[in-house]
Image 1 (tube, rainbow, N blue to C red):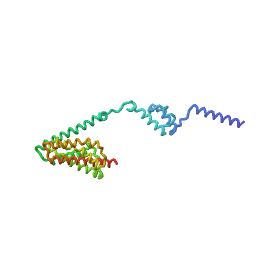
Image 2 (image 1 turned 135 degrees about the vertical axis):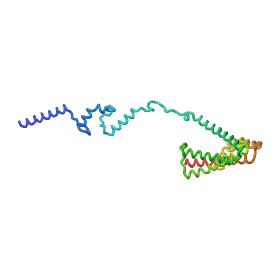
Image 3 (image 1 turned 90 degrees about the vertical axis):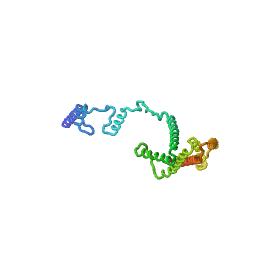
Image 4 (image 1 turned 90 degrees about the horizontal axis):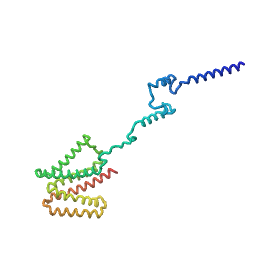
Length: 271
């Protein structure tokens, strides 16, 4: 009887504890006490959730997966230009590249004509072509130094190897510019440019005999009228003199070697 009473009392106590657990569920939560959980429940209006709890499933908020889900949901909520279908505006340079290239060609020839006319006018009352040509080069150097120092133009990285490669290019360019200016002072501008029309012929000859590049025979045939035309113009030119003719030919040769050294420098830089 005593054992039976003990079993009955134990069952009653256990049933009473189960009924208490059903009436008042446990407030114990992960990472906090029951009072903290009560504050979270009671203070929900003070700290509203940014996203509905159903979007997180059963992941605890302190886990890495929940943090990643928060970042993903925030990035998805932010509007992007691609999702709205708005294309990036295309500028004039990207829309009409042929027009831009043609504009640069036009400005090159236009400024070259103005440059030659102004030089010819200067030589009428200041016949010192060497001084004028050196002034041209000095102004160019000064412009580059000011642009680099002020940040207007970005300076290319330079070292001793690049200086050795570019020094022959600079020397040939300087010689060609000076001799061209002397030629403009000695003869008419039109005749000087007629002689300088032989520069493609010198470039082809240098490519064939110096660089070892095979030039097609058809190209030589296309240059033959140029050579014949320059010869006829030299024989019939009223302002012909040897100073202008020789300096124009030296200018052609200098610019030809400038092209050769420039090509070698670019090949070395690319390699």
